Length: 219
Image 1 (cartoon, rainbow, N blue to C red):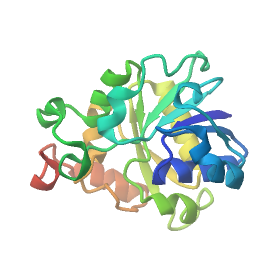
Image 2 (cartoon, one colour):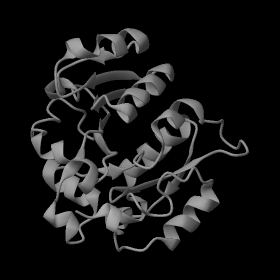
Image 3 (cartoon, helix red, strand yellow):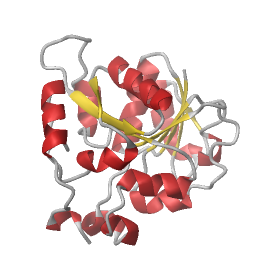
């Protein structure tokens, strides 16, 4: 599969490492230029590209950048992508630590619905609550004891199925987190966030979540 990754922070770089190791063709971009990604490209075999070119020919595009930077992604970022391209959103809202106040989210909009509106395309929420290093170290074969589960939320059933299959191939049990308006259940501050639960634990944590943001997660 051809995968474009926009963002080369902890999650983006580790997804690049794992996905190339699994044989996927990965193009990775950051907010600067491909020359700043030569080490990651040399290590993994991924192709370092400009952000505008990350989606060229891609079946899946991962957007994994600071939430405050999402509006800077051009609406044309999917030019050249596959017609049925799947867009994964890994972003989290950290108002006090990084992003500042985003009024719509403060007023109750889910983070991924806001991302979807900024990008102008449907997204699937995934990989936002796992520690980045666990992407490298904690993946296990299907059916293994202690396999970490990850929630996946989205409105497009076909797109969500693609992402859930990708989660499984990376070594984690995918759990259907509902539609995008349910994705608040996996936002920072909820029981599932950073939990490393198995499938049963993830389902329980999603059910126990409450929509009110705690004071640490509000501007």
